Length: 106
Image 1 (cartoon, rainbow, N blue to C red):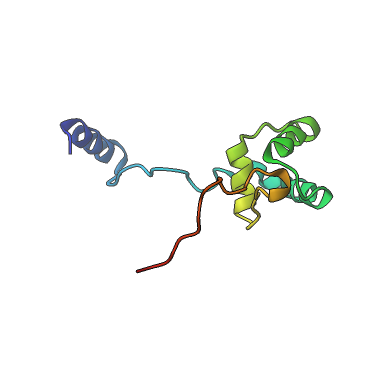
Image 2: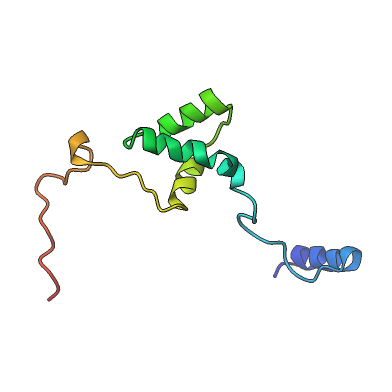
């Protein structure tokens, strides 16, 4: 531990009685930006199953006035078990030429 960290922890203990480090990462309640718009976001998928995250973001801004990063929208759907997969119809998920399947364990 660095001396600066020790000084800051001692100061927090003296001033506020805190004896632990501050929490790291996403705190509870963060990421709930889209929670109020859940019905709208889920209806978008019912309306058009192959909608892209970019299209969802554009509709959020256009119809609800809410700007959200693609990662925020992805996280909203992922928490509900909904994924966006590429398919062969759009030819974006095809295997590279020359690749073979794994032979197996030896």
